[in-house]
Figure (cartoon, rainbow, N blue to C red):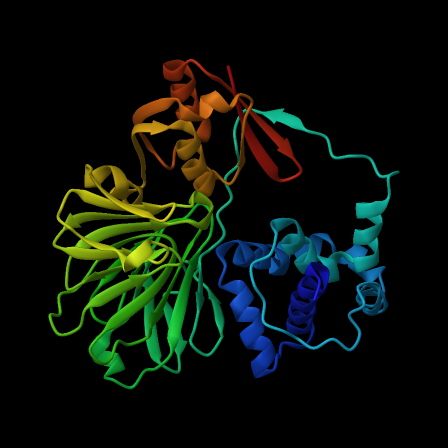
Length: 398
């Protein structure tokens, strides 16, 4: 099945959900699989945003979306095709496919393919207007809950979850061994959220990250799955090891404090130990190699190699306290981390600029230009912020 067909499936599911409020079990599972990616959740929230719908209501009313949708399905040869499991898709199709049913599919294709339409103009701006969408909790039954500050209690069939001061809390005394299934916490670009798991373990989740975890741990093991970055304070239990799984590697402990960074775009898995003892293994390393870390060490896995280096853990855990802390780090890495907070693309006019080193601490809540000004003055580089529609880009030059 082509890329376009797959995205049409998701567009159809969201369209049906908004129009009827109901999806079959199979359809809901398919949609939740797609929503498990933080960037997809971000697009989904934009689509269902009430103000967005209101602002486009007149345009929607003028379009026969049912007929348009059928025409586009026919264009892709989608008629009669069965629904299949989805995988990760390119960003350009993700947003277009989700918006396609709302803005009128025929109009979307017209604007994409008509050369007469004026090109979007690039505008130089002084700063980036950071927009933060609320994190999302996907319950075990597939229900999607937006974690707004006013929603202090979340009621589910597995009990009541507290949601106060950007922390989710699962009360083990309430669960009492009756809860099953896994929940998924999704934090979009520009945010940090914490969750107290049923065993007492506390997890801080960085921006553009997701954590899948059992509603209640049972048996002789505790396992969670991470995409992105998180800091863990694991509740000790010698009879039940705690394991963090990622696409790149895993960390296993009994009770300790550590940070795991496994963003797909970084192509680097890093586990940093602040307290206790952990065993780290990497899925792509030959011979299933693993290492045991002591406090102040970091295991890094890339290119099928697992290395251990001495580090200052506070550099790699400062994010959970709302700080950017860079120590002799290259500009490419720095701007990639900043982009997950301020939501922008990065461009270097000369490749050599990517490796310029920088050291500094800046609060995440400060405007982006404050940090860029410091980097510019101390590293002898120039920067420019541009905007096309709602997409920002930071360009670094000599």
